Amino acid sequence: MRLRHVKDAFKICASNKDICIENPTDYKGKWREFLENADSLSLEVGCGKGQFLVSLSKENEHSLFLGLELMTSVICRAVQKVKEENIKNVLLINKDAALLNELFDENEVDKIYINFPDPWPKARHDKRRLTYSKYLEMYKRILKKDGVIRFKTDNFDLYEFSKESFSNYLKDDFKCGIVEYMGDEILTEFETKFKALGNPIYFIEGTFK
Ligand SMILES: C[S@@+](CC[C@H](N)C(=O)[O-])C[C@H]1O[C@@H](n2cnc3c(N)ncnc32)[C@H](O)[C@@H]1O
Image (tube, rainbow, N blue to C red; front, side, top):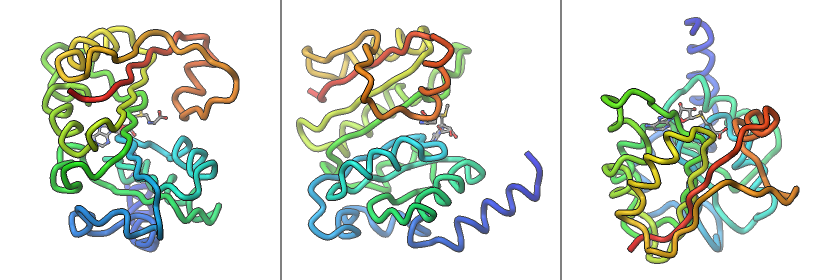
């Protein structure tokens, strides 16, 4: 990554603090206050350039959407989208998912999306996968009782690993398998690419025990 590009990314985030929240741990337990009468709070972990959240936010103007993304050079593109489209119900957080417990109170979130996370294919990197037990413990803590978590990937090995991992945490009626598209779904950026290649897309969706 070119240094200049990174510098620009920091500048874009720093000059849009109403969108890319500067000290997000200050808002733990208070996120809903950003949107008057917010009827729900959804979180995408690893939101990338924000395509999914921006589209979803337009269809649900009374819901608040938070995007968490580790890479400043990536989240800055989401910041630009939110700004250009004058969207008022998306906030972005440039932090590592490892900090989820510092960012959210217990039972604060209604829905969590984990869309096409990095597969970390080497066995010795399994702890880095966003569906590793350490992360599931945090999702369980911050999600409301009966709040829904949805995971998608085109990576079969990650799907199998995640199914095993989720099965220890989700109620037995969780759903999983290959996504069957009806044509009106909101797609993520990576989903659009993988679907166009004809890759099967796998999902897991359920509520925590
Ligand atoms: C393959 S991209 C998918 C982006 C988007 N969700 C989509 O489906 O188009 C995965 C994203 O997750 C981010 N990510 C990976 N590990 C993360 C972590 N621990 N905390 C926050 N974001 C993370 C990466 O920087 C990357 O932008």
